Length: 111
Image (tube, rainbow, N blue to C red; front, side, top):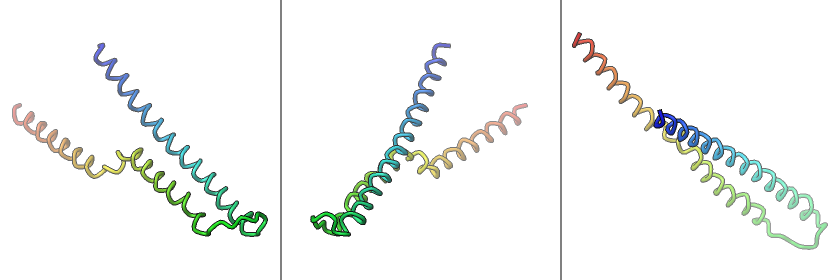
């Protein structure tokens, strides 16, 4: 009984951590979109019209979205890594399925 309860608690804990990780990724994505949209709009609207006397090189508009995007990509890979292993999971499920079928056949032969 206690073992089952601790198993359920650990199962709940793992599920909660997974949900928190996914939520964290989506928050990261939203912040990425808001901040980089603001950076691009500032560059296009404010700096390109000469309202501010500072000249910013054109390539700098892409550095923040690019490098932050790379970080965001790896954050997504880390969070959704279990989804990327669907082929391996499929193989394991099929192996278990075939093993279960064989066990059922053996039981049927015994009776």
